[in-house]
Amino acid sequence: MSGKFLQLMKGKASRLLGFLSHDIGIDLGTANTLVYAKDRGIVLNEPSVVALYSDTRKVRAVGTEAKRMLGRTPGNIIAVRPMKDGVIADFDVTEAMLRYFISKACRHTRFVAPRVVVAVPSGITEVERRAVKESAMNAGAREVLLLQEPVAAAIGVGLPIDEPAASMIVDIGGGTTEVAIISLSGVVYARSIRVGGDEMDNSIVNYMKRVHNLLIGERTAEEIKIRIGSATPLECEITLPVKGRDTITGLPRTILLNSQEVRDALGDALNAIADMIRNTLERCPPELSSDLVDRGIVLAGGGSLIRNLDKLLRDRTCLPIFVARDALKAVANGTGVVLQDLSSWLDMEAAK
Image 1 (tube, rainbow, N blue to C red):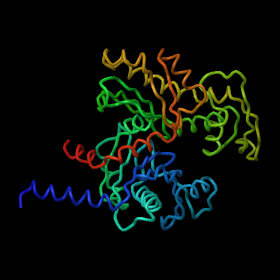
Image 2 (cartoon, helix red, strand yellow; image 1 turned 120 degrees about the vertical axis):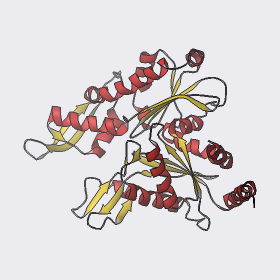
Image 3 (cartoon, helix red, strand yellow; image 1 turned 90 degrees about the vertical axis):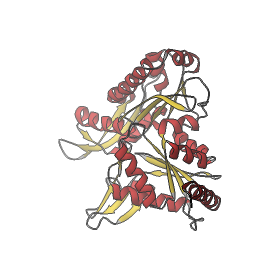
Image 4 (cartoon, one colour; image 1 turned 30 degrees about the vertical axis):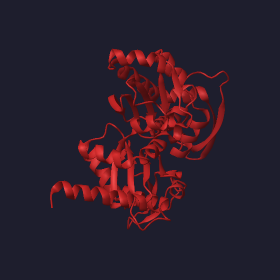
């Protein structure tokens, strides 16, 4: 048999299996993992956390249940984040986490393995891409398509990326911030920095220790960021009681933290994001730059929800800034759109 005939038969078999299986899209984030099932929408949104027995490395819990254990586990159990800065930090644990999420999303259709779209940062290396792909395959996927996160986010928020005009997306996730200028369904320029929600949480933890001599955990830092974090001064500054352990006495203590202090703590991370956006605009071709004057920049990801971040970036870039309506789910929704024509995307990937 000729090679073309075999390839044709393989393609037909793949499409037949596609009708029998439920393809899924995965936003494999540093902080949270979202799973989109074709024709069903987002079916899973859980923290990217795994709890393990420290001696055997056997999985104790995954996702929401595991996150509750962060900082609260006995000596024989550890709760870990297998993703760091948007890429795999622990191959075996990531594989176990993916297997759990894929199994949970496809629990009613296990007789055919699913095809999987995984959103990955645009700045990852070829080695890191292979690691993600192998983890998904080992976790039970039949075929895997890797999709750049900013492209997925742009599709998910409904940007007209197939037009001969510039669309600019900024996706601020847990481990990375992705910026991309897209035209004619292709990435004109993309950049990724490993600054995101986790870096902001660490900044708050360090600020509390340095200024208030108070030790807090990452869950508390995240709550502070969400409840009183801001990028520019608020009309009415807000406060929040924060509990932690005094670094001097070692005893529990509560302080009243205000939003001005949190803004100071977040300053370096937010400035790094603003600088990256400005650098991206400086590299944009002149014809496409003129499009952005009218179209502006769209923000997606959990980090985009920080109060007044759009105002800060508007002041820094002098361009219209829009926060996506469903910012937290933009990447997952983008994988869902790709799932509607997954065979064509896989064919394009194979042709590269």
